[in-house]
Amino acid sequence: MKNETYTLNNGLEIPVVGFGTWQSPSGDIAKSAVLDALKAGYRHIDTAAVYKNEESVGEAIKESGIPREEIFVTTKLWNTEHTYEKAKVALDVSLEKLGLDYVDLYLIHWPNPIDYRDNWAHANAETWRAMEEAYEQGKVKSIGVSNFLPHHLDELFKTAKIKPMVNQIYLNPSDMQKDVVEYNNKHDILTEAYSPLGTGKIFEIESLKEIASVYNKSVAQVVLRWSLHHGFLPLPKSVTTHRIQENFDIFDFDLTSSDIERIDALHGQSGEAPDPDTKQF
Image 1: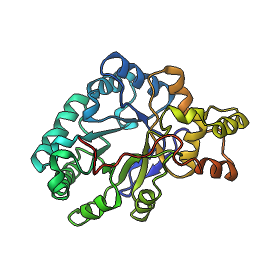
Image 2: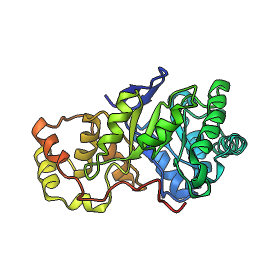
Image 3: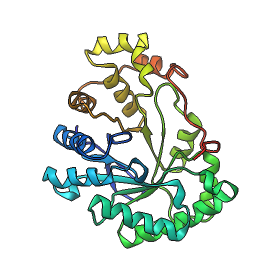
Image 4: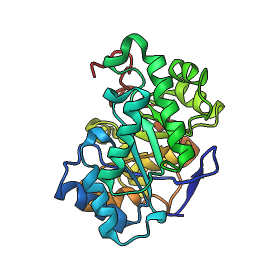
């Protein structure tokens, strides 16, 4: 079960749980966290140019001794690079920092950056064109987006030759973003969940503590299992060895339908998704 995968709309298999590296400082901390994750059994590592830890992620992958083809690696294009030429260069920079010939998934990190707010749709179209070329060249095995809402995707579809394979969004029991998930499902786009454990407040929710005690699992394990039940791909992040291991130990139990419904009802109790059209970056 730990090697379970989803299949993207281009036929590529992607492990159902990924290891997030947002806020993992470059250097020993990020490198050790990724090594711990790979040792624990993760085979899906998620980073981004703006995380500034791609070198550390790449070093950990190399040092792990695990064959490259057995690890699914994602990185993301940052907001300042939304032109055809800049996107091409940015991907090459990320590949160089990672020390890899290709990444398995490349994402547009945000749909409407402040630098391109007056013409975001055109900027995304040009960026996507560069990513489609990279896909056809084999530099990336799949391409997708992050933080895109339906209206952003509607615009992208006007010029895209290749449909996004993934939309990575803020997603947890506190904000299920049902309209975005429904849109993704309708268009055969896999929904990845970043911040799948929300903010720290989620660990203080009494109903989650009660559910976790029934299964003899942690709140984090229950919420991650809930994510899989909905067909999401959670990307938990941690730099603490035992939590990294714990967050991957979610394949030996199932939640009842009533418990899933209880968790579904927790909207707004631990933060909500950011609005990509108003973010000041």
